[in-house]
Image (tube, rainbow, N blue to C red; front, side, top):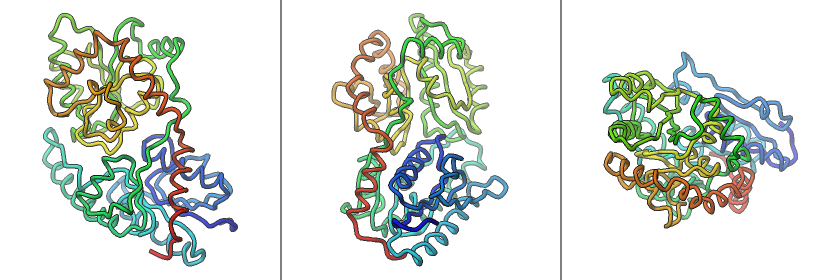
Length: 390
């Protein structure tokens, strides 16, 4: 590890561009090395561009048998080993862990709060329900490590309040730092829209809604509410909007079967996993995210950045950034099919007006880059006293 500035150790599942937490952790790592800090990453997956950087050292942690449970346990052990060795050599080194992934009490970046996140698995097989409850119990027990952290970073005010009320983390320890934006999430051009519609095989004039989220056996992302609402809407002769569902997971095929059995597969299409979310948003007119729990909601954030109105639950942290004039895009009950149908019927005749209405918020979100987020993160840490062990 290069000497000079004090080193940082970052412990996280991933440092890449495939998920919200992973993007945030990548941005922090990139900012730190740009400031001259040596950085040690302890992770399952690290983007090649980061792994090749001369100031970055990587400790890769496997997932034996593809098990996330064993992989997370090993990540915590290796993270603690690296943190202990680094701080022993460099007493002013800083260590960042994510939630309950590693029992080290310096800086904890809370991307979600399991104590505020109930299981949503009504459609799941019994074995999954049992496993889910065991996993949740373990996650909540490990999450209690946040109470003893010197600094806690929350990605929204919702997350901050959950940490205080469900875990008892002292409020003075918690700093809210919103996520940043990718330059690729710029306003959609006419050429973007034409190219994206061609990729999807969709008519240029047909209104298009999208859902972006993981589709496991659980229904936290609200796919069940959306399915029921869409089936009802498609019974109306005046409903001319098609829906694309993007996301991978164990539940994709079962939801595809339900859609086919309901006779709406021509109106609600399962895309599965795609790494072309930027293009998907370019083709869309609205994003629908009826989540039951979401600490922030980067999918909604990115849709807004591209100029796409987003209907989102009040239970998502991103909703706190909506101004009063966008309140009709917020769902107060993410499980209410009636409310979602009402919101969609209210959006359709004013589709163009909603695109204009979100422009100030979109500009505000785009103005804050991932670099800005990381700079604020480091400023908070530098204002605190140096770490001394874990």
